[in-house]
Image (cartoon, rainbow, N blue to C red; front, side, top):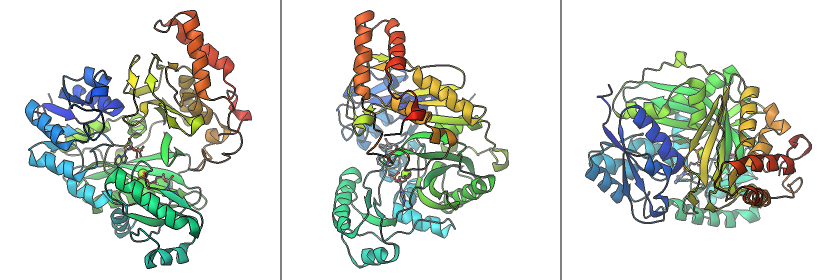
Length: 504
Ligand code: ADP
Ligand code: ADP
Ligand code: MG
């Protein structure tokens, strides 16, 4: 039935995205190959695969970032293509090129696309040429040179120091006065060098309290490019998204159309192929929007787009990589209802979002109408700090915004997790905060009022209380304690009634 597509694909990633990609491959009748590090040998992405190969090692460098090992395995097992998910090697032009040289199709954009768009300075220049408004920036500078002085003279403070190769919020510093600038340049460059192997940093004008609104694009190798509407991603901690929704409460139909056209213009001018995301900052005071960067990969929050459009983005990535034509036309794209995603992290929001480790003693995800869970873990699994602390993504769909938010709130309240600290009750707190419910929020939402209103009881304390309650009653491995744990949470949760409380 799918003879034109690949017969076997290697997924060079781990966690929820490796599971997610395999689900689509299996639906398409394609055999899946998983790879895994030592700590991941019992992970779901391994057990679900048709074939699984050990990478040998623990750190990302020894495993999911080791291009040679990955390509050698793909050759040995006869995989015709590699999907790299997001993070790791997904945006690495050297890897995409090495795949091509080994006769393996890289499911994603071309190495040239990645080179043109992976660098923030270069991609902003490209976006500007394509007619998209950009936030003003300086050339690269590692100290306060003439270009930096000129930039400061024009734009003043506050400003952002950013890494040209940046991603995941790393290598970014907010600078409010001149004295902070030199140390910020130095520390951002150091962080960027160690995270990306590229220490180039630059200055960017700081937009106060913007919204982050991004546009999904899809392009085939035959010149067809469409956009798949927007995702609102302003709920962030440390410049990283934790809740996303679509449609954005901030867009009018006219603004949506203009942002969509700008995104398509950027993709076209880069001769972009496959799925990508054009990120914008939106000044909601005046509806001005600015190109921020383009991510040349599948985005973490892609499921909300899938839910409102009823399509499978990974399937399109595979079809486009196999040379198929994009049959979706811009005029056919209309969102149905509303979708929201919460990222479930093994981290403690009440202790500076520090990652948490341990055994997932209890992991009982909710289910129900309009719910989707993209998960990379199972009960009993050991969670380490070797990799990103994202455990799963919970997605709720509803015919309108208030119903999808209600479904999400209910689902979060029915999600008992024990053994390590998660951000679940924090997400609940945000989801039913009056300003979130109104849709009147921006990227400053989670950081404001940081010295007031911080809940006095950490979730760590609550988790311990639930775990003790569960153990005391029926033992941790039965289904029973989950009910007690849920009930205990409802009674003990001191910030359950979020209307009266401020966010931390
Ligand atoms: P998204 O942009 O898809 O919404 P994030 O910004 O949270 O998501 O990043 C997605 C994942 O990719 C995270 O695991 C993050 O650590 C990783 N990541 C993002 N950019 C890079 C990069 N340039 N190099 C390595 N990892 C990256
Ligand atoms: P990354 O590559 O780490 O994802 P981005 O450039 O996409 O970096 O920015 C991540 C987040 O940082 C944005 O969503 C926004 O919240 C904030 N940010 C980035 N640039 C600016 C800016 N010029 N003004 C205000 N906030 C910004
Ligand atoms: Mg970004």
